[in-house]
Image (tube, rainbow, N blue to C red):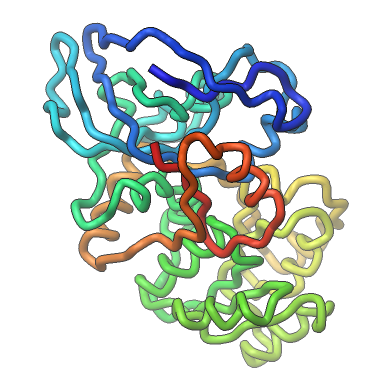
Length: 334
């Protein structure tokens, strides 16, 4: 069995293919033939050593993958051989609130990930994927899609409300699609007019180029009649949170996504004076994943994939993600 492994942190030269014995499932476990795996910005940060340097190496990277069950261990009841599945981001976060213990079960970081021909996971750490999706499409769901679902649906998004998405990466595009699926209006930002046009094709009502309109928060308020948006999906990075606080309405909600929104110095006064709900979102539970998959199936949603690379070109896939040229998800086919 081939697995792509991180053997040292710092740059992409630390990514190597290793031959490993075929894994065998124990009680309650299943063996999955991985067919596709998707990259997230977290994966780039991990290999560069800026996410955490306290990782056990060698490490099989990537949290997002999909494939079919090829063997089941004793006592397995959730899946049979042939089932099409994806792993959940945190293998022990099945439902309820996130705890510190659950957060230490994340694929591709705390434990080995999915960039391998075969993996063994506990049956509880898997979900069935929608039948209408390809393996490449299904592989994009565990992190970015569940994060967007948690940041909007679990936060109480209602039909007719307005959502502001920052940029056109994986989480932002899933947020756009999920918001439109629920009947909400979406205002999108990007540094590219071409990407904004593509966002409009996905259902965004308005696009704002933050390079040509650096005070984009004022444009957002103008587009909402001076009120501001109901929800902000905040993935913009250092310096954007202050403008997001200006763009959100009184009593609105801001979802801080992952590590991308970190590093900003922010005056907390607007949070208090506008009664804003500011919530960190660290992906989501298996229950959220399954609820999202049901909605994806009902609405026939297809994830946006920018480019698919073969397994052997994993470094090129990372480089493409790093370039920022992508619109949607970067996927590896195994």
